[in-house]
Image (cartoon, rainbow, N blue to C red; front, side):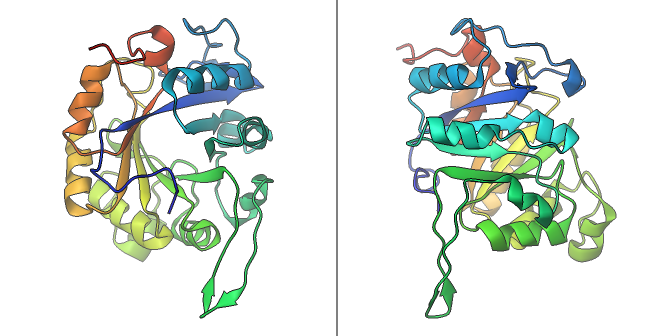
Length: 275
């Protein structure tokens, strides 16, 4: 289990800062093609350098987790080594790295991962550092690849249920054949399949249609439903967070954390929290 995750429901949602990086600079994730994401403009820093932006966000939020989306890897399948650089730069921070893992061959994109396997009462023990892989449905090839990821990285893995306007990104017929997922709108079925194939204790629910809009989170219903059905699953929400009122609303959904970028850069979510 990831060290920084408290038992579900034990405290208000933690704020997890996010950076999206393409071609070596931090960009602003908004609706539309990722290739058209503009260079970051922020009230917190004039820089778009990933190390500097990460430093400012971590200093602002006092978070010990940073979510990093390597868009070159996600969109083009070209690993940039960014997450490894950030893991080196911030050794006391858990780097959740989304590098567009599709299948087992892509696991080599995590250069800082170290493994030590010994047999102790027929269990495998692994050693790892501060880089935690994010397995997103948007890029994941299918249930076999999900199972490979679970075998490779459990328990240090975060699975992201990627949606767009409520439709599962990355869904294909293999999920129906192997796990009876009833199509790209069957979120209940996909959550069950992801949990079974990967064994993950950590699930992100992210609707890309909400990212960067500042229109609020639209996945409340599913967040509540998932937490109700799987109370031991640590669930994280992302997309559309505006301010502390949104975080309070998500707290009532019993989520364990929220992923935030635009609201921090725009100054609508400030620290320390206003009294």
